[in-house]
Image (cartoon, rainbow, N blue to C red):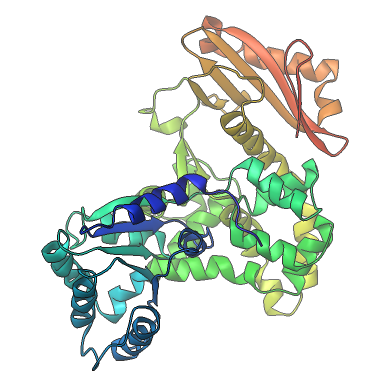
Length: 456
């Protein structure tokens, strides 16, 4: 698959390359698994040779041998051999006094088990040589929490050394559409399908395209029945991130995926206290986010809800993990049938997230708003999918999102929507505007005021 988007990140990387004149620097590329960290670094270096050091789970002497071969091939013959990692790093900094060198350490978190002293060695040589050598050190790893800790933990050797810290997120909606258009796979429905499950994770789109299917139903069937990556991805993430606490985190994430939103609901579902684990899932692992209803004060903990920050992991815990038992008895086709049957309800909920993303990224009607979010009351009896409020003009835009646009536009449905808005006290201070979103003729459609219509 061709390289898509990431122009801003490429500029940041290339800007550091241009500064390599008797000055060393550190760049960190962080992000969830499969987000495209390695591909980004390779793309930024496609016209510039660099050393690629993959930190595999091997003994250090074997890695030093591999990396020596890379040095021999790329920047010149090494006479002798390195007896430890510190010698190799010192050698590179000395070489970088003669010419500019870029070194990319991929899967850097593996040093924690292979050679924990590696980070102290890097710190020592970097601090001594940073003003006299032209060495660019680029680091990336598939464990988001570990990479963050290594470079942002105040007690860690490399704390404060990164000149650039690039955190990769999902590809934007327009880029997701571009990928599907290029593959001859685009419709508004297919965009909703792929957003709901794979949400702009580049490697997952490669998996979709590699099936060779041209409709989503058969694509998903191929991925579930004949491929392994969907089954393995969530398991690999949990093994990498959670270690011995695997089971409790699995239980919490499964309960959230199945609609348990409040801390009390989650704790009832898992029959255990969840406070510290929820904090870690939000602040350390970046897997969940805690939301309050728009207009509410964030200090009111009882009304807060927990949501997944990543569509793929929500899909995985809601469906793949749930039906793992069928895979174990070689009934993957049955698992697919169950998932396909349950998918519309999940996608209906994700459609709201897609429309919200469209307003944030594209803003088709150039609406001025200072905040955007869901609204729900304490009893959960009155909810609005999306509210965009502009505190400066005193205008609030309310969006009703339903997959079936024709149903949304029926008179009785509109009246229900207007009545819900009238029952929300904070909205009495705003001039209210109404918008409607759905799917019509296989396209995503948003209807605004004065016959404004956005079609994606």
